[in-house]
Amino acid sequence: MLDRIMRRWLRHPLPSPLLNLLLMLRWHCRIHPWARIEHPLRLRLGKGVHIGRCKLLCRGPGAVVISLGAGAVMHDGVILDALDGFIHVGERTTLNPYCVLYGTGGLRIGNDCGIATQTVLVAANHTFDRTDVPIMAQPLSTAGIEVGDDVWLGAGCRVLDGTRLARGCVVAAGAVVTTSFPEGSVVAGVPARLIKTRSGFGT
Image 1 (tube, rainbow, N blue to C red):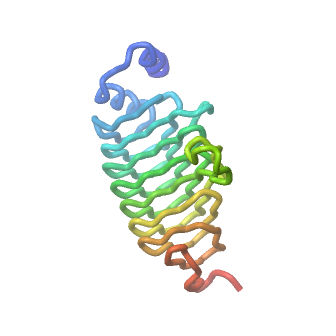
Image 2: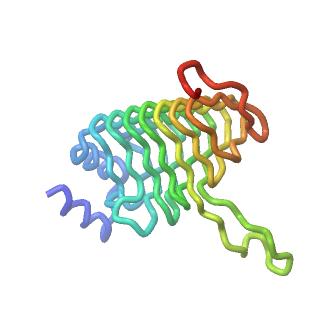
């Protein structure tokens, strides 16, 4: 029944509060009445997800382009935009206010992660090899981003395309991650560099 109503929504859009109520009934979660959700049939939510006044732009070629695991939390002001890729957020992971995630090349975030306020993850990058073509007209590189379980991204950090942060990594506030780091790495700086490895990780 709910799926049929949702499909009807594609032809005759519902007001956000009504759409979000239907989504809450469908997925057994909490969604702010004025959260903006585009293409809701491409969204998958785990039980107990909490979505504040956010934007979830589920545009992309897949049947499911944004998925939030059970118990995940999105605070007010968060933007998730799958673009031509996908965004997967694991169970019990928290996205704090004003985080922005772009999923062009594919973005995976593991379970039990803390993503602090104003963090940006961009799973694509502009190429600029040619000088006879404007940069914005040149193709994108889309290697994607992978963030493992139990990772903490500090306030205002940036994670760029083609990087992998393995389980247990900690990224300092304001850092810019341009390369991958192994399990338990503590990184800081612009660009981010290894400061130390957490006890219990590594050799």
